[in-house]
Length: 115
Length: 110
Image 1 (tube, rainbow over the protein chains, first blue to last red):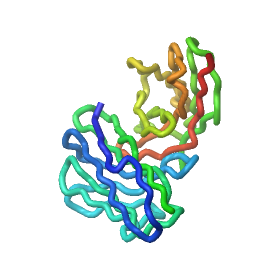
Image 2 (cartoon, chains in turn yellow, cyan):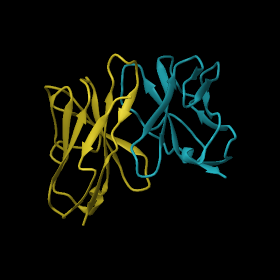
Image 3 (cartoon, rainbow over the protein chains, first blue to last red):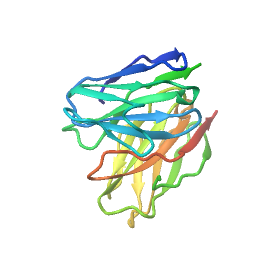
Image 4 (tube, rainbow over the protein chains, first blue to last red):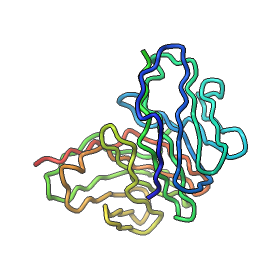
């Protein structure tokens, strides 16, 4: 299985601040995705991180609030900007492992609590 | 919206086979069925996926009905560590985005 590492794994953030989450994959992948999982809920796709171009955001998510970078084929970042308590969630990075069929793997998630 | 329907919860005795059903009556011909599980506080773990044929790996078996409108995930010998929320997801062949439903909370009892 692919190894997807996320940092930080947990953080407690002050209201109004921003936090950048890093996602590192152990091999080159073409497709990377960012998901949010609010407490007690299922996963919701935030955006597709495209290498060399702007991310593609899902309905309800905007670049100003969740800027994403994808500088190369193994790395992506998600920033949660101007945080409020409603942003307290698990943020998950996932990637499609190229050349290994259609399997999509996930990182362990970044637990953010906004106070 | 998720294209799958799963029971919200199920119990299974330790050592027995756990059979988790999933309905996907609107599935299209080029859409795959994926199963993931999420153990509390962890990221989703890939289990298995299939298109038409039944599939088996070291973790589980996936049985897809001939009309592809439903499937069953089978954990052959459930252990306490299999307690988790299990998600059945339908994914388009051209789109690797996963649309998640509520899943089934499987509780393995000693």
